[in-house]
Amino acid sequence: GRSRICAGTRRRMRRSSSNASLLSGNTLPSSPGSPSPNSRSRKAHFETCLMQQDLRDMAASMSDLTKAEALSLLSAGQARSSISSMPRNSSDGALKARHAMFAMNHQMRQLGHGRQSNSPLYHNPNDHHDEMGDPRYTDPETGHIFQSEQDLILYELLQGNRKYVKWLQAQDEAGLSARSGAVHLSQLGAAEHLSMVTLKECGYLQQIEEERLGQSGGPLRPTRPKALVISCSRSFAPMDHIFGADPRALLSVRVAGYTCSSADSVIGSVEWALADRTPPILIVVGNSNNDIVATAVQHAMGGRAPHKLNEQLEQQLSDSSLLNLVIPAVQDAMQRQPNGTYEEVLALACEMNVWRTVETLLSSSKTINEAAADGRLRVVGALLDVSSGAVQLMGQHPSLAELVKSTPSGDVVRTAEDAPVPAAEAAAMLYAGNLRYASGKGGYNQFSGDQKLLCKLCESGQNPVSVVVGCADSRAPIEMLFDMRPGDLFVLRNAGNTCASNKGSLIGSAEYSITHLRTKVVVVMGHTKCGAVAAAIDAAHSNTDLTTVAGSIGHLLADIIDSAKKAAASSPGTGSAEQMMLATRINVFNTIEKLILYSDIVYTGVKLEELQVIGAMYDIYTGKIEWLGEH
Image (cartoon, rainbow, N blue to C red):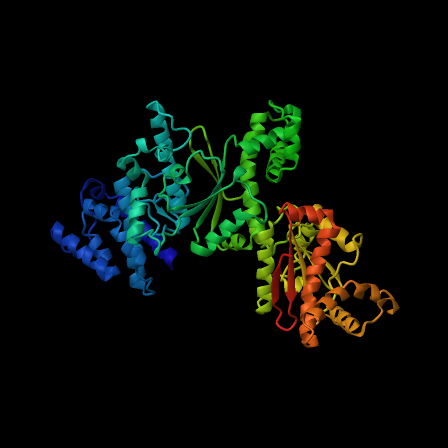
């Protein structure tokens, strides 16, 4: 129905546009029998219709306005904002009036703005499509009506970049050095160059004042960002200057080489932005002659590169996780241009690195993937020419449909590709995991069975956050009570969580995790109602000769009985339950002491404060862990 109404309206509009009196005269065609009041009354009547949101009267009154009056009202945005806020009534008369207003809006643009641009982002009234632009998304400077808010934002950012390029050219013509970035911000560090005019041009005075008053953009009512930009950490210029935007309009994530891995702070920052105040646009901005990409190209091309890297740098780069993220884009570029020169491969690799980052974002994050699939987020690539400051939009990923078709599970696994976790962070992860488990909110360790994650966990190695020495008791499942995932913990378990020998497998296993897997924390954990500790207390009270105990159980109890005797001696008048709790604590610290004394690796790590060994007690009644601290 809407398409037929729009088509009929456009046919009538074209017939009216061909009328000589319309193009040569100063008034728009009037409806039959309509009054011809003076200019002031016509405007007053139209504005009354706007306030009352009367669509039919508004369409009729608009036909009485002169061309200059209508253009004045439309350019001020009054008609557009009022139309967009009106309810879409289902009555035929209201729909006809609404589409008559849309058609009148297009007619005003034809009469007042002349030839329109050929950009596909906005609706050109000379193109007779059934779908018309939405007046809510109209550029106030040009009157272009866009199909969506995302189209309008991209158009505004491109127009802002054109102004930035013209500003750079003006600086060059004036003999000023502005290529390193916007002169406004570069002057902020030198007080002698600051002026009120400079700060006003930056827009920072207005921003500070609005935040102080709590107005738009203030701390209590933050402005919704228009776009999130991922760019290189090298400071060519602030992104808000490059796009000619208000500093509050863009969220900026900057990382060397404008790249990211499947689970790092870049993806986390994007997901946080989407959860907080979803920006409708995500732009991955690469730049020409990027240093990181250039180094990767030299590394990959070897002798073909004009500047060969020295052996020491080659060795450092082979272990660089950042370079390993960029190398695939360089390999893609070399496959596309096998005989290309260094400059040709570098230019293409800078573009391919943009697409690689977009692929990682969409294939690694469930949040980003779903937002892109349902249209809430448009992910586009762009390339900044550092010599001119111009930004070229590359559009959406060529394989976007395939990328969003397969939604990531949202699960992550820790592998050897990830950086080692610092001791304080690892301890915090263990603490938080146990709180989730004890409060009944665990389940993070429930692996989804995602084949990609299983393959990654299998082929990329392990990177546990902690070594946990625990008891073999089936009531104390280590991974579950810490709410951890496969690959997160290096677990060593025996009856009584003890260390019986300085050359045993427990010491060797802990040393392997510390040295080869880069683990920074060792947790020795006992638990309530431990059967091995209870047996040691009984043996201590009865003075049992442990050498007569069958099998190897006597050797196991011999390593715990000292703790039992200390507990009995320090609290002779207490019951067995209190003595057992004390003996379990003493046994935890005895094990910590043996780990440090028996192992040179553990001893050196603790002495240099590169390793933290912590004691803990697990309560099988409550599920909570009591942290005992270091020895």
